[in-house]
Length: 172
Ligand SMILES: NC(=O)NC1=NC(=O)NC1=O
Image (cartoon, rainbow, N blue to C red; front, side, top):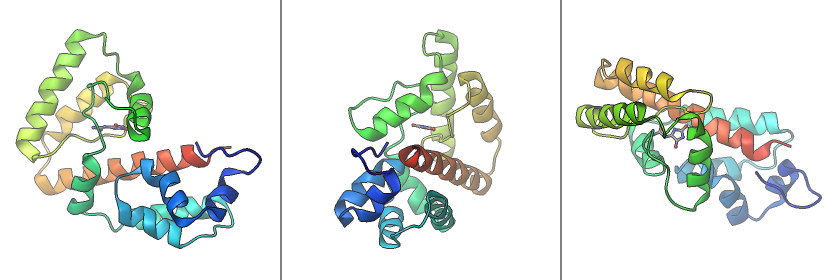
């Protein structure tokens, strides 16, 4: 949440120095080029215009961006560690996962291990609004994807996570 006394988040972002503006949106996704392009196109007349351009920029993402971004996304079902903004956001997004449910927790851990063995990267899913059970069934479904299908699905989930975080950062 970009909250500086008195100014609305959009004005704050538009008026900020480049490095401050980059810092404001860095927690959305760990893809520097995305943040740099978004900051370079300031000022934005509305939050909608900002979000539209941010969404357009995500269409260029491929495997390299996916692998870059995954470093900042803890596994589903593992309590996101760390004190950074990303960890805070991840904890919020994953708050629906009932980590007290040992059976679910173990099934997610098992699924994550299988997924990583099969696709060579962390399973990524937009967790906000999804229960742990829903994410487990999505994980099982996606284990049947081909590598190409799965890369496309993972990228779409990364786009959703990123744009939801951006929305949150500019919410009044
Ligand atoms: N591996 C993941 O899917 N992680 C995450 N999904 C989210 O929506 N937030 C995360 O940290």
